Length: 191
Image (cartoon, rainbow, N blue to C red; front, side, top):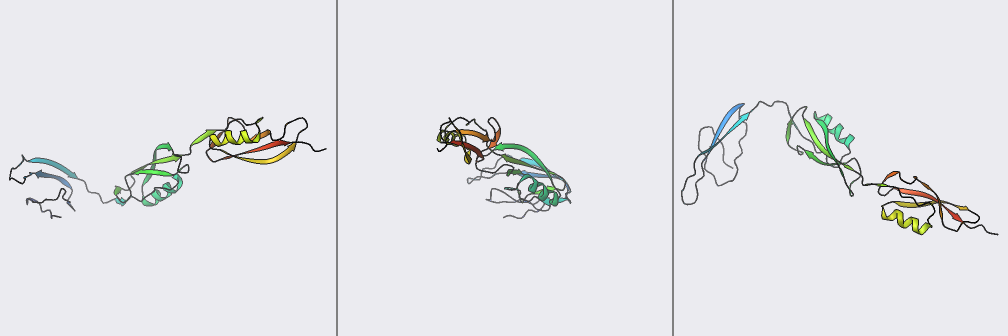
């Protein structure tokens, strides 16, 4: 990589030039491109203002951390957590950091904000399965991403065997995909 010296032209085939340790102030860079035939472009200039930044810290990675873990990590680094967005994720647990800005390894002013996107679970509404036979109830719950657990079989005179009598959580309650609905089912009396 070419070395930059003030007021000295640089000739390079590299598409970028890194300039390290510019003193604070305004710096004007001029670019002239010369093609393989020797044709020169018109000079183009850019002005860069460098501000003294003695309070820079390295931004840590908070990806795949919970929001509270990310806050603690950023607090320890002298940075502030800001939840920029929450997005539904079917393949991540709720409350996990999916993205961050600025990225890990970059430098930021102490006290500046790191914006994160947090996952939310793919929530569902618990369907009513009371009165369904146990196989139908399992199918209904499977279709919305819920499991089923038979907690008891209750003898019920005059009621067909295998019907759902109660459920927890109740119908129309919010739940996360993968949650389990506990049910009690009927069984025939013997005798």
